Image 1 (cartoon, rainbow, N blue to C red):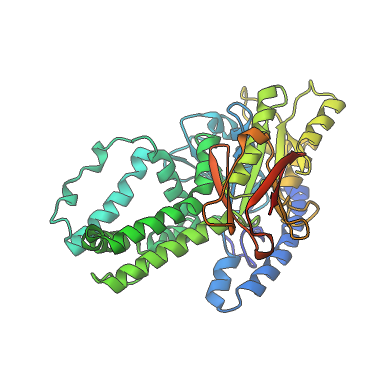
Image 2: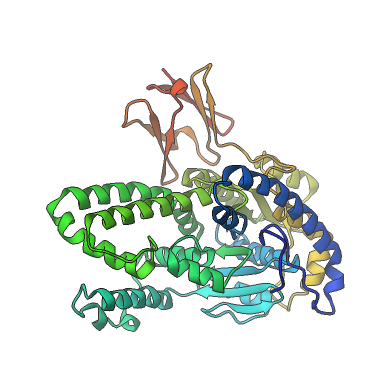
Length: 465
């Protein structure tokens, strides 16, 4: 990798040893660089104003890897969009990694590249990896075994576990996908930081097993914080917790390097580990709420009506999971007329909406020609769009102190599917919809009991009394 000016996610790498076809990409490279440079200026201003307390924290913020994913019904073009985005960023000079989870071979056909369980370089600036849970089981287990050897907590029982014979249980795919992304993003722990420095990417494109699983992963950090709160309370306030908790915490900390300190079997150390876990989850949760760190796009096939309805629904589910949708893509179709395209765009207002080329599986792809094609221009612009430029991110919550009301953007739902609860007086609101729950903390001037609610233009307006 060649040297970079500042944040690698903001400034593309310049490679003087590009291949002979690179001149074809110069308009694309210039266009993408211009947009990303604008983003660098705005993002760096925010980082400088919020994290000037130490040079190390500022450095870590400006070099954050950006994670991008796509939400859509099966068969709507989710994998196609992920491959297109990966090629777009790689050809712009950003060190990109496409992370796939599942046995679908669509990406291999589009990239003309055999994808394995370890990152392989598919083309300039583009690495690809297929996550396999049976293999991902092994490294955390080996780390735990090493930690146990040093601490001798299980008296050798853990050493006798043969990881290769362990099967994958329901739910493990999502858990180990999260661990793999944490490792690539370098979010916490010596284990993740070590691998982040070794395999550092500017952009990570994640194409998961299903949209439902991806939505669960997006909301996992914020939801896990409440679980952690109750588990800590049990560990600190019950006899069983006080007996077993410190040893288990010490083993996990020794394996993952959560606190970054040598483990000690005492109450003070346990409190530090709990606090570190809380900070990790808080940091993970905040990552998904920052557009310059996480991009989430809807994908749909205009030839399948249920695909459009599902995309609207996933928009609402993404909001419930705690993130914002950056835009929407539709697979280009020769059967669409101008009126149909305009109607589609209206359905997803105020999101930016564009079309992505319909790629054929019958032959190898000429990505230089695809990227320079007029059909790709809108998609390239949307992927390069810096947060806060041209389109304003759609706010999912609006508080009106004068009318003492709360307006929630809930696309894809109707009023009968939304349930409201209040368990802690009038200081917060629990919203249940799309098999997701979201806690909304009310500002002092709007606090109180729910007086009524009405559904207007894809938004739920809640009156507080």
